[in-house]
Length: 115
Image 1 (cartoon, rainbow, N blue to C red):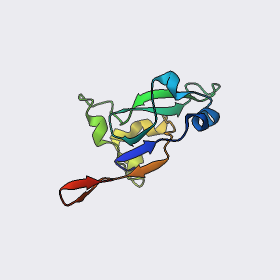
Image 2: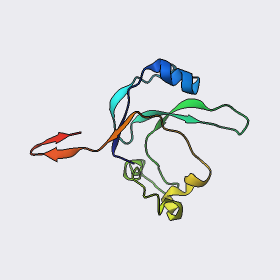
Image 3: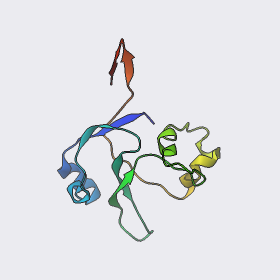
Image 4: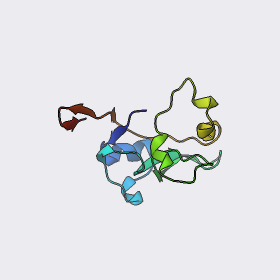
């Protein structure tokens, strides 16, 4: 996954797809979402329930971590090895859908950063 992403589409589009309003979560569209920030995700709590939107902190905090900032260091995972790493154990049973309409990395252009 890239280091930043955006979720800026009209709220009506998200309401149609996920049957939920982000304003109910206290979240507004953003162009620069960074690790550890609160983000909306679609998840299903029980097999018989319909998926709904929830607000969660972006990042994966392993069960053995003592510092929540670990979540910022676990956003980039290699698809070839993610199933074998202990940090990504939740991959087996705890999944969610992260709505996004763009992904990007910051690059240094002289002294400034450019998305």
